[in-house]
Image 1 (cartoon, rainbow, N blue to C red):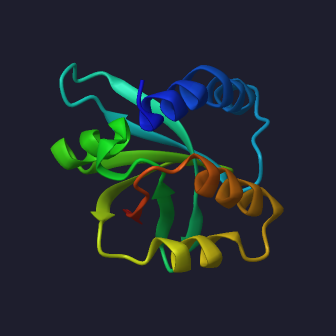
Image 2 (image 1 turned 90 degrees about the vertical axis):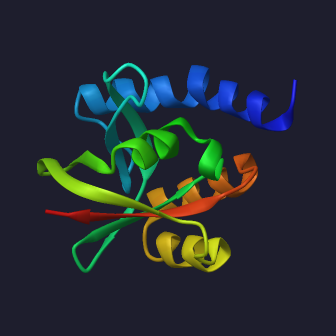
Image 3 (image 1 turned 135 degrees about the vertical axis):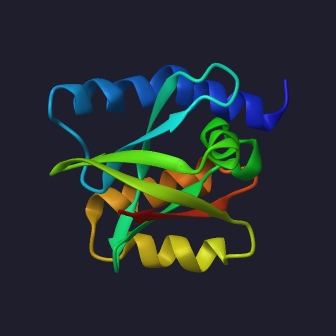
Amino acid sequence: MNERRIKTALALYTLNPIVKLGAAVGIRPPGVVLLETTGRKTGKLRRTPVGARLENGSLWLVAEHGEQAAYVRNIRANPRVRVKRRGGWRSGTAFPLPSDDVSARLRRLRKGSPGLQLNSAVVRLMATKPMTVRIDLD
């Protein structure tokens, strides 16, 4: 089993369910949002907890596995997404940014937010091919 599969399984079966359950009952770590994409094969709605920072009307996040992340592949097939934050659901258009400087982006994301500091540490630990994603909110 390769490194990405091990780390993906760890997140999929341990970390993500805990965060999703917390989000369902209104408890979410600061800086964590639910990203809803449309499955590229099934057309079903898929929800993934991600750490994101709002700047100038756009949400910024780092996908740990870059192009291999399921939600990034879904975005490539259909960039229209929804994001659940404190104020409810917001629609937007997502843009994978493979040329963005991920290290600089993680430093910027974690500033001033304990939740995003933890998220950035987890991303650095779990990442195999990290990539920035920008979501322009409607």
